[in-house]
Amino acid sequence: MPYLLLIHEPIGQRQARSRADGEAVYQRMLRFAGELKQRGVLRAVESLTSQDEAVRVKVGQGRPQVVDGPFAEAKEMVGGFFLLDCATRDEAIAIARECPAAEWATVEVRATGPCYT
Image (tube, rainbow, N blue to C red; front, side, top):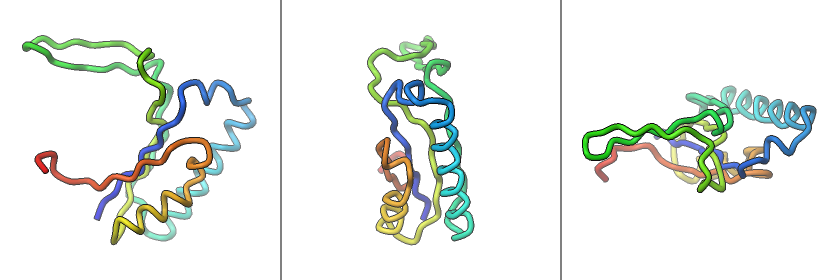
């Protein structure tokens, strides 16, 4: 069953790191992704850029609205994700516990499924 690990990181955390520290963190995440691929549970993985360049689109009363980031009300941003193929929720949680990002961010585990449930 597919599970998504969403990496929620504090706003400004990336800017607070030195370039060397940021590269070291990224390399740890790449190694972790490689291990998951070798185990046969990784479907997809991506790191996301800062929300400073993101936009939010919402349609209200038939009129689309586009709001440019950064988003002042946000305390965290989604910094990336892993899409896994796990036999159970417990397996997905165990993998989330192994994720290096859990040391500096929150790793949310969510099953995929239809939006009507």
